[in-house]
Image (cartoon, rainbow, N blue to C red; front, top):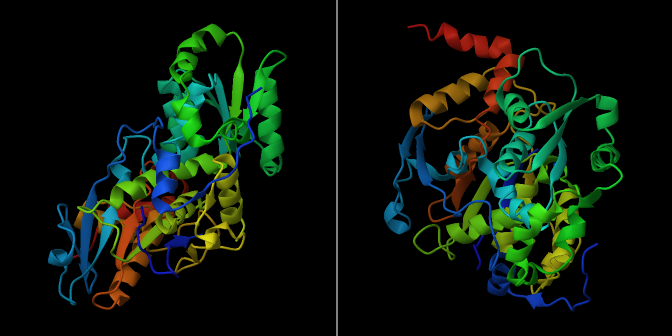
Length: 414
């Protein structure tokens, strides 16, 4: 599978005792690559499907939303009416949506396969990642331990409230949180006690190749036997933001779905736009599309190691083979800050299109998609925005930035 992208724009991003065998690493082409890492695998999401909408914009800007676009040349609009596509991953789940759902798509079945009893992870006070882990673990009878940076807010709301409702929250001083790996390791060991064991993703993913793992005839048996092993706690540590190589799988699965001929196809040039925290989603898009800076190198190296593959495209195997075009947002700021006018911009988009974006993440991606689609020459690459969710994060932002959100209730003067 190949989703053709311009070589300089794989994605536009705004700145998180097992049996072992010695086997040779096969060199994989694009089709073989996706078959090896995706086939015969269990997933969290029953389907990779996502709604794809078309956003037409004119000067002003004024937005028009087409919820049932037809793809291909018949869908072209005239030059005065620029457009981009929006992959509505914000609609995947009421609480676990966007890139969090994609990054956990290949992760949760691994927890069940290895009879994990507890998960330890971390994030900010309004972390969508910790809330997603808490919800999905609770659905599967797995206990989640969520280490949140800073102090407990006076009123719980948004993702913080969901983390508290579904998981076990501990607030960690910022000085301790600064050393995440040691913090996670120490807490996981305290949960495991004398009789339990602590696992990291490298321990379970590298145990066998992706295909071998899920075609194992003992797979179902291991799930069934989990209740017999419940007296032994097995603790799995998940990195902040699910920034592990296995998190790339769900994004690759999404690109495979989008590349079907009746959707975006495999032959048309595309520019994907996605907001980024850890950058995992962006790197997964690039790896799947090109079939792939610091985080990028680490994830690619882990992916090749854990899934025991090399790529025919040797540019992908190079350590400096960056395929993601990392872009600073138009109005730079300290991470997490909201600037004047951005809440109103989110409100305008919501009122005209029914799509909710947030001022920290998805607004930046939206503005970049607008800019790219406005500047593209006729017949050039089409622009696709991956909506990464974050709806509940608006509640936490409203609590923190009362000045900006308070201006909304005043309405517009006529």
